[in-house]
Length: 372
Image (cartoon, rainbow, N blue to C red; front, side):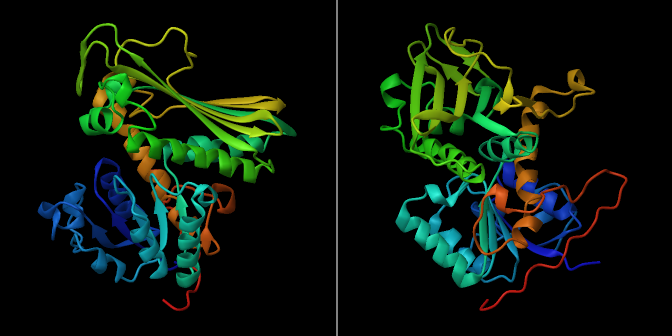
């Protein structure tokens, strides 16, 4: 049996809690620390934080304590990432897998990219960002489909989501600004929307590099629609004349032609703009070329017993999927060469827990480190 990878879970929100549980269940991994933000979680056993048995690992709010731990990787999931924290972890010799952050480093401002690259070199460590989308849908799935292509003319990723099913008022109304006047919902007036615009752009930059395309530009168009009447949703209320729908469209231009398109179509509640595209709920990835290929992806609590599961359970499935894409990437990242890594630069990412009745395989040992 090979040595297990020692892992720290950073943040225990809705997705971080699922990642923590996944780490404890994965026989490839060994939990060695937990970083939390709430004082009420200080000193709480990791198992108690995610509904698992006691582990003996106590959560801490101290960044210095976490950086000082001996670990192979950090599952990094704060609401807002701090470049300073990521660089400190990398310099200390820890690989870092992020969500949602650093989906591909080439899109970082040059000064920030140099800081991250220098930290990777100092600690002989790697950093990688993933999740559902951005992440699996916009990076892993297109590349997997490309394995059946001779030539590719265009890659399109469509996301169709009704945020009324997402019971998180802070993200829906405060961060994303649904329910606000249209003049307050723009890339210029909202820092979170601007951040959101950049992290999706990362996917196009990475796909272009992986598929051998040279980008001239990545253009972003953002538009909103205001509600004609007031109405209630699970997590709040949309008032008349406030924003109930947002559309983000990213276009990667190569040689004056659109080669990569990500189209995010988001609304809150039953209304939907009649002139917008109407793909199926979830994510649709299309490769136009020889041959042309298309895949539709959605996560639910169950497909066999969908009607018996609650809306909250189905919505929560996306948190689990996001968390496990991160957790399952840890062995591949630990075995990757030091640096800022993209999906196409990692070995195969697969489940460590696997079938409920099958003993999973163990990975190779982590690469040797120096200067840690």
